[in-house]
Length: 169
Image (cartoon, rainbow, N blue to C red; front, top):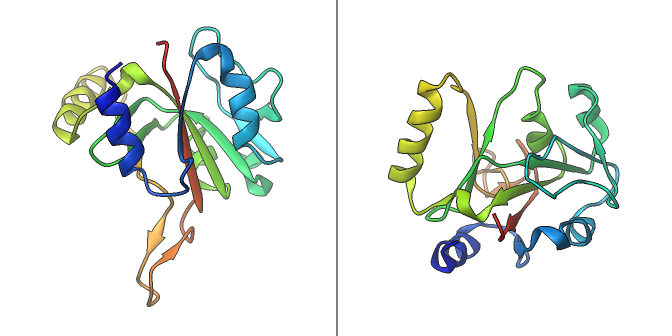
């Protein structure tokens, strides 16, 4: 893991001062509990030794589960340090909705999945698209819009975005 990439990612992700937290996998449960407000639902995490056990996060049963959530937790495929952006794969089950509907989105990202810029991100996405994974959501902090006058956050998505970076991946 490049500490420079992590530092840049931390400084570019818009949101709260604690929007990015770097943790060892063994500390994941305790840290996750600090970032979650119930009701909370999470998509599967495919990181070895990391689970929702001991956290208030329940597994996603259906895409309709997102209607009344406060917190949605997803695994991020990649982080782009230059912009504080995470990529989220769209799935047939609608797992990406967990990142879009709740007031708070917590993305879980392996430090080894941080890339420096969009050029590197497009190279990697190109490989994934060639392999058949052709739909991604790119999320850069809380949603914002200025089409109603002044800048407003959280109108078209989460008001609060946080990222937990797993350092020992």
